[in-house]
Image (tube, rainbow, N blue to C red; front, side):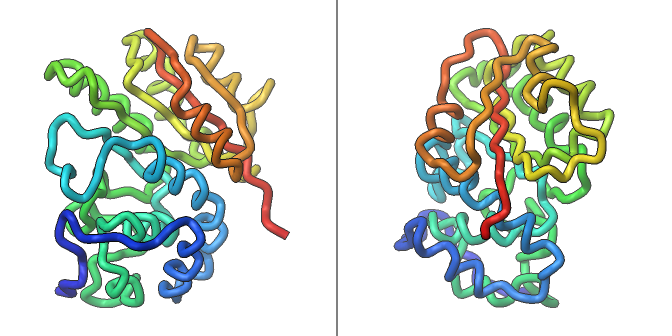
Length: 237
């Protein structure tokens, strides 16, 4: 087994500008380059400005939880984890290779900071809903749950059930970020955010590469209701 993963508390020296260089260390998965590219800004804002979690607190029950449902093509996720000290950048070139813990879908047992093993679409939001419910049952009311999904995942019925339940249960610790890169087969009348607001959620729609707008939307108050942020991402020219 490759042992280049960082121990909790490892120092990080990369900012946002260094992420492309970290991603470039991972090769052999060109099929999912677009998936990685579309999530990079959202992931960075979450880990740099929003989430209350660090390499030293990944075992703390009071930490925020981040669940990557859009787990196919996780290069941007690994790059951000490396930039923030969860992973050793020296392990990135082994991505997807035999013996590397950095698989083409993240494995929660191998990747420090990964809350779930993901990549099979439609599971992240239900898991996040259950996580938020479980934290509340344990009295951990300060811990927040964030889940990143793709717009295409909303074609899965499991997500609609989670959306309906989360509002009925008043899970205001739950935050969903939908990266909208127009990959959904069916779409939704009135836009993706309407899929949430019709169920009583709080929802905002923002440009998916605008860091200030993302931070404001992700931290907006929404007492008594779960919250959705639709991050619209256009392909880079």
